[in-house]
Length: 222
Image (cartoon, rainbow, N blue to C red; front, side):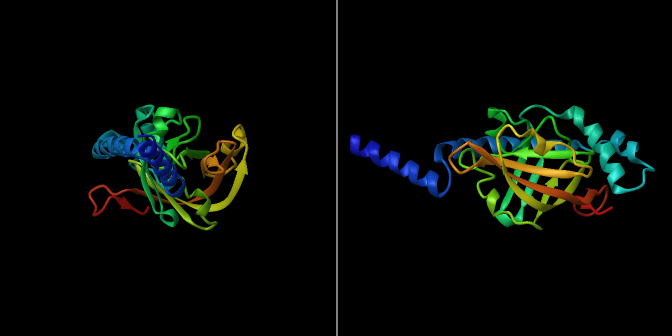
């Protein structure tokens, strides 16, 4: 029994080192599935006729996206799905939830509640695990300057181009402050298996695709 238990522990440790913690990965997969269903329901009902009426006659994709983001904000619920993040460089395509508390981050990457939504002025910040609960940001350090990060919300899709990386202290709130242009910041614990610091990726908004009402496909460039 002791030998069997030892083998299990070693196997668990090996999987965590190579990939991610297996038990939390299974739980994270279940919770991410729930978040996926929530997002599908959200996308099916948004934007509403009233939301579309609010942007009728408004010129420019950025102006329309801002109005839709502000109208969407009251719908936010802690721990619930709000959108999706895609990063080709690290093969990421996962649902983002609202909040960065323990329970929320078990479901997927979480949007910092004290930062802007995509489409609003300021900085959008998203945190994610590196070794547990699907480890969505495990390879955050492999993202390169110039790579694109796409954040799809129910009202529009936003493409950010990576500008730089930095390693900061966990309490460094300065990285999520507004900088004068729409920006995305991704954060994850650093180094692996430690919460001593944070790895941060900074990206600048370079493209907005609006919801294609009555068109083919979900997104339509403004």
